[in-house]
Image (cartoon, rainbow, N blue to C red; front, side, top):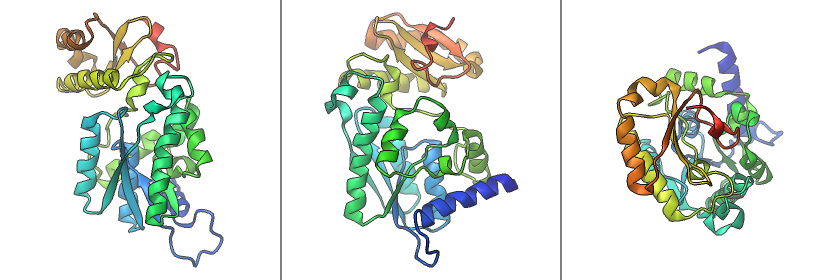
Length: 281
């Protein structure tokens, strides 16, 4: 392992064992690690387990989390051989989330992590950690403000570890699927200002599951307020996707009855934040 990355990993260890403690002789903190099932949180849970630290994993379910992703997260946690918890959080009862406002993520993260904080109190855990990294600090991430207000710690971000370094570290440690694409929650598939419903989120998740079954990995379904639908696919998957475009279009029309547009782009993150919906296909 590169010395620079090793030093950052030591900073992570310090953050999760002595957070806020001046006395190094005290025992390590007990804690909760939030595991969405993505690479960042899986790697954090994996490292905590390798260090044999007293952290319990929790996965949050809700209408904004595709069932297939929850199933994968739970299966991965079960395979680790340690007790874990699943809790439900439904942010759709909050107006800012229901109307998909620009502060949606702030409100949603608050709902989710207050539920986790409640579990932490039940278990007597002293610290809650999650997997945001240094690159997340550069984008539009109002949810990070909610985490900070709740005292949730993001060790990767604190140590200045970026996404590429997390992939490198995952390869070094033998974690499964180190190239796993990021998969943010289903709210990000809808343009700001669209009214959200559990049914709309369910249909979106079903289409994405079918598209994934074609062998595509890094893509998103994007629903615009004016009725347009875009299937956004990372440009590196263009070669494979070209042979499945007709099937992809049919999958969308089956559930939404709207002819979608296919958009190949160099990134599939921040679509509605960066006005990428205006990009040329």
